[in-house]
Image (cartoon, rainbow, N blue to C red; front, side, top):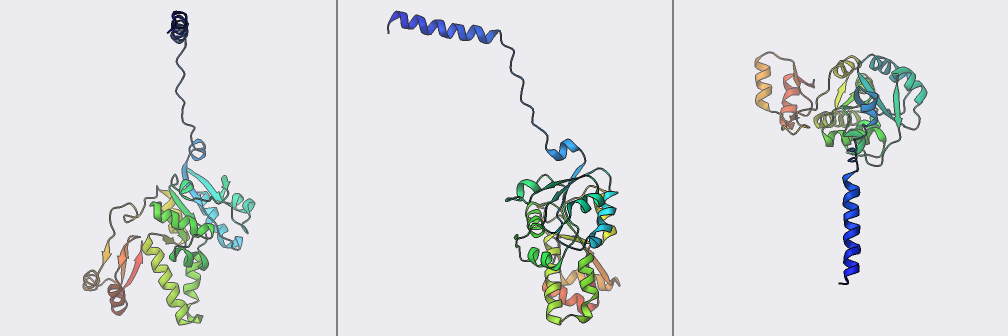
Length: 255
């Protein structure tokens, strides 16, 4: 190699090294906190469904009193953001994502303030074609607690005397399915209390295995004189155990 070329390369390398010695090291790039973290508070996701506002207003007003919460709400056609925001307080609104995993994985819980029949049936069938069911299914799959208002469910139960038997059978089948998946269908006061403390995922969703209620469990409850057997969300009830429970007059409910 030509000596002049070698000298040129050497000079360039030495100049670069000398310049590096006088430089202040670049600061490390700090991660930018997520919007939920920067706003502070426990991150909860609200996913409404179209309904008369009077139906969900009492629950939203009660949820406003839960301390230390940072609410993110999903925009849904037919839901008035201004009225929801006025009842719930400070809310960050987002559009329904194409992939729900990124939105849900950082949340402490998914809250469905109205659990209409079409939402219930879609969750039971693992359909994700509307925001409420998509969020619920994604939450179940990721082990994020899903809490749903029991108001519409209770209204259907109260109307059971006027409804056809096959309809009621399918309704109860869907309800048992979603509760077995770990979705917590709670009355307003219970839902607010549950959110008042940090929400933990059901044992089954957390990968600890599912409890199973069998005939032996029901026989033990009957011997103890129990009429109501409470189990945690995610517990599996075998068909034989459920049939036997009805025969024994024992109601199996999720806590």
